[in-house]
Length: 59
Image 1 (cartoon, helix red, strand yellow):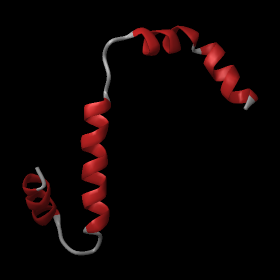
Image 2 (spheres, rainbow, N blue to C red):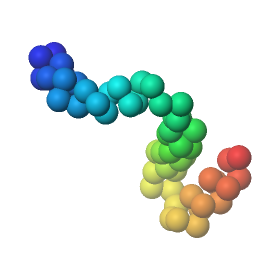
Image 3 (cartoon, rainbow, N blue to C red):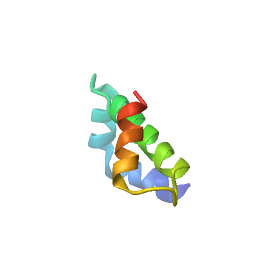
């Protein structure tokens, strides 16, 4: 816990900017999570062309 607190103190300007900024990367993170889920479900089943078809069809 102490190392976490020290890291926040060292990056205080970054933490302030992250809290006060109106921008968010939530949409990007959601898309990455969805892609990783599909990849895990398909493990060992196919190559890139099948993954590509699943991702395009998953919308």
